[in-house]
Picture 1 (cartoon, rainbow, N blue to C red):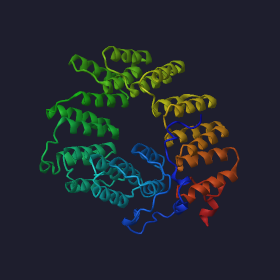
Picture 2: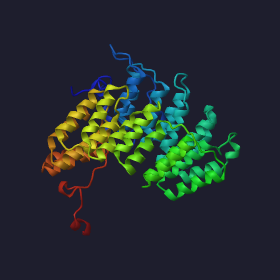
Picture 3: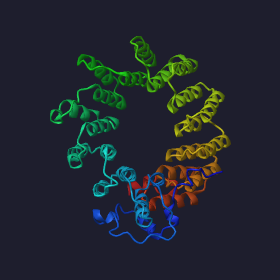
Picture 4: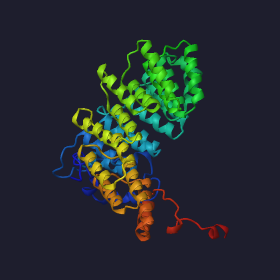
Length: 454
């Protein structure tokens, strides 16, 4: 009951593998003396009676270690050397994403060069989209641009890669650099047009991500002045801007303008309209648009249902929100983690939340780390320690490695209940893993004023 069907597919190499994982308990930043030591020079003989693993299972197992790159790398190497699994481009890309998350870029390039030498795992556009994303999240914009220039070595320096770079810059709040790259840089040397609707939509979305509403309006007007043809995606982005900037009625006005122009809305546009009308005119009107889109043959997706559920919760209509969830479970549109987060964020009874948590896992929806953190913080804030431990135990059962936020949520709950010895034990455990602990005077991890003055 407690373990989901998905969890049974995931592997736990640390229960099978020799205790080399003890190497990773060190707080050192790197245990590898040089780039080539990330990999075994010669794979050892496979363990007897090892099953064959498929790419999906390996990727799902790696997903359990997204908050612990060393354990992810250990598993990545173990499944190849001990189980003779041949990594695909997809499994390499997953490991790249994890290593890049912790700014292990030397390791990332080692993986890429290894991919290049293997005909079954050639780097693709997704590979370098990950690299762009990880460099830019680390604010290493120049490195991301240099990576794009290096793509000639992989026959991938093309319009797709350029758009991936621009999209990553805009997604992670480097829209100024994206604009300079597109309109003031070496774009004439690229051999393709960057002054089109698609690129402008990405820049517009970039200003949206920055929350610079005046820049959004200015750029929207510039598109008209430059003669850029606005498409459905342009309108969808700008409706979302109006909605998020506190002007949902303007989003509704744009929706009516689109209908007047005869534009056929897709599910993304309808999702924004449902949200805008729901905020400005009430949940019933939002549900009315939901019915309209279905009548017009536009099939709602999981985001549509999530939008309706949020509107219903915001209007205190919990029973109707549950009805939508039941409708999703009966139809082909299965709920995702965001669906359940809507419920977890609004429900106020621990037993009801835990029951829904079990239902989520039994339906094959894997909790994310922020799911565990949200629930532990919520139960801890209410003073319920037993549910906190139930969530923590489930996290361990499903093979997820707790991050600093999970540890801090558990430690805070223990301190609130006066269980200082146990809280100190978990605090020491997270520090041993190299995770950042919150300074707490009650645990002796925060300097007092007298100590600071000495």
